[in-house]
Image 1 (cartoon, rainbow over the protein chains, first blue to last red):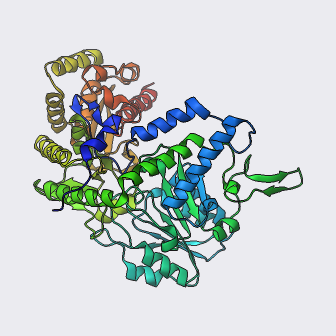
Image 2 (image 1 turned 90 degrees about the horizontal axis):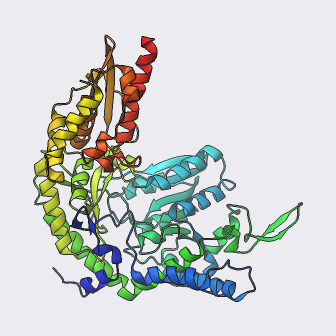
Image 3 (image 1 turned 90 degrees about the vertical axis):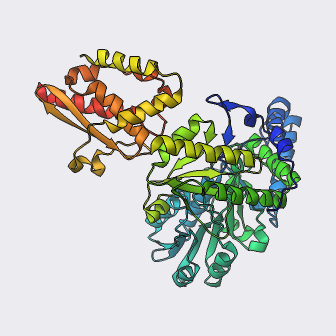
Length: 408
Length: 140
């Protein structure tokens, strides 16, 4: 196995939370797919903002407002370059992935008619199912689902058969939150474009591991959350191709998103402000930019290599536990392992692990259709980040063994 | 025994343990002695909402006392519900309605009392009290 070039112990020192204890034990944080931890480089930016130049943006003539506006727009440019968007105004600041999805779903209400078809994948998070169901209810459009196989991979042949001239939209996550499967989104996007459908990719789970190039992907919409990639909660971005963002109506009305208002008519501001009504999460946006800078300084390729090393090690070690079954064994996976042991309820294992200072996620991971597919109530999910270590994997495996001994 | 006396007895038992592991092991044992709910009552309607694991609780009136049966698909949850049922089964509905549940704190399960906690201990207590309220009305 190849050894990482990253100095993990030095990286860990950037994250103050990693040195705390939980229930008297050193914290072993393995719930990174739910939210990642925040390095001091990002925490400093948050403190600097509130202690140095907190002001409302885009409107003030005073210095603080201009400083805050500059930093906010610099962050937009950082995000633009990270995802290789053509224009900065194609980056819309959002409160997170769910907000981005709802913004697009709401916009399509006026563009869809009865009988139009929408395709989602069987691997979706509830946040990428429910908004589309609501959209279908509003418009009379029909929701179709790309099925999955036992390995947790999408059936791409079945997807091709679902596509037709009525298909208007396709939604799929880049990486499944419950299983870690990396979906073949380039193929999905190309095929959708052949029938004239637009594609939204939920990049929430991919963004911490894979640097997506939206122009190379030719994706129409790509959404992410900052808090999954070392940034703060309540911040995220929606990338949309200029032509699509121009076509979609505004999501919310308010200040900032207008050009001119009279009681007869309001004309909307240009992109990106058309979709950024009200005072945004200024500090969150700036900190999101700082989080991308932090991760890029480490390097996404080094991160991906090391996380793959962790995934392989953890998979092999966990499989030494008697009766442990891993759900999601796709060939292309991020560092997420969803598992159960025998018939033990995931909640029981999670509760004991918590007592041992180990944070994992248990339950259906907001992806009930996947759990129904496997006919299980949920799984225990351990998700690894670049600041996790093999020693922590060992602690997890020992913890699972201890829990199983207590519960069997 | 009154509810308060039973609760004190439970607190006494738990006070013998030095660490969480012994407490959890005891709870797991208690779960095994849980008076199981009749299969016919294990319906979706009887599932207590707010729990990550499935929990079913059923109550029968015997004379003027309530008797509870329950089940869960998670072992620790089964232990928690067993503790609650031990405290409330065989009691008069009015006493159940008025009962204090702070003994949960004292046996070191305080973290399970948070309303956002996935096992929904709060929902279980609420369901037990709802049964008591329903039967109390019937007794009047």
